[in-house]
Image (cartoon, rainbow, N blue to C red; front, side, top):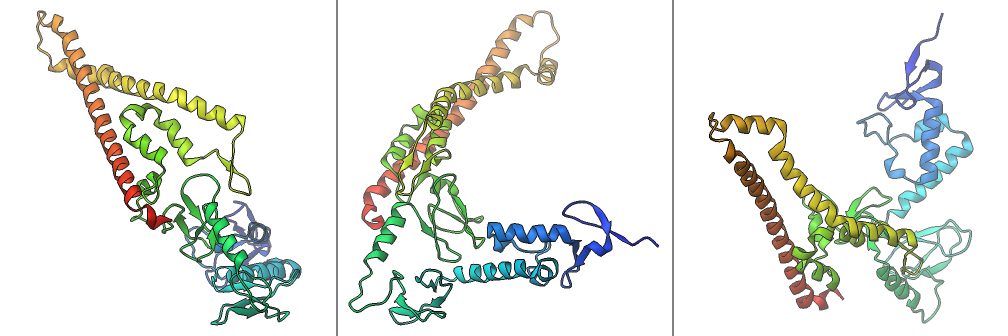
Length: 342
C-alpha cells in the first residue's frame, strides 16, 4: 500500500508523510529537510525575532520542540544557546562578563558593580571594567560619545544602541522593532517620515538652504534626495565618509539628468493628455460641426496645452512654497532650540 503523501509549503513538493513533522501546537506540518534548513538559517543570521511557524499567517513561536526533533543534538544545543543569549541581549539590564572566553552575565542592581554568575568576577555595570577602588567610568563616557558621533540611537523596544551607516531612516533592530533613526520613535501610522527626513530635530544649514532655494533647485531634487539619504555612502569605523569614483560618478549623473527628467515628464504628460486618441475623439465631439470652425482648432489645442501646463506649474509652485516654508521653520527651530539638542 502506497504511503500517504503531503504537500510542503516551503519547497512546494509532495513527499511521503514519513518525511514530515507536525507541530503539536498549530498542527502545521513541513518536511524535515526544509525545517532543518529553516532553523540553521535562523542560527546563522541570528534573526530569532522572526522564528515562528513558516506557514503564512501563523504566529506560533513555540518551535523549539520541532527543532529538537529535526536537528541533531549538537545543532539543537547551538540553537538553544544562541536563542537564550539573544533573549538576554534584549534586556537593557543585562551586563556581559568582561573576562575573555567567559559566557557569564549578570543583571543590574542598585550597586555600582555586578558579579558574573559563572566566574564571580566583579565589574562595573557602566563601563564593564573590573571593579577596583576609586573606579572611574571614563571609558564608558568615551564610548557613549563615540557612538553618538556615529549616529547610534537606542532602540525603543530593547533600549540597545543601534548604528546605521547608510540607507534610509528606517531601521529594523534585531529584536524586531522597526523605528526611525532620526527621531528614535517606532514607525507606525502616526510617524511623520517627512519631518524626520527634513531633519527638524537638528537640520543642517546646507539642508535648510536647499529648502529655502527649492523653487530654483527643484529640478535637482532627485540627485539631492540620493545625496541626502546617502544611499550609496559608506563610513569607516571612525564614522568618516568614504567616497569612491563610483559613488561620485553616480551622484554627478543624477545631478545632470534630474532637470532633464523633470522637464521631459512635464511636457510629455501635458502632450499625452491633449493629443491622446481617446481624448482627441472626445474633444472633437464637443466642437461645432461646421466647415468654418476648422481654423480655430489649432488655437483651442494650444489653449488647452497652455492650461494644462499652467496647472502643472501652479502645483510645482505650491509644492515649492511648502518646501520653502519647511526650510524657514527648520531654520527658526535650529536657531532657537540649538542649545536643547547639544
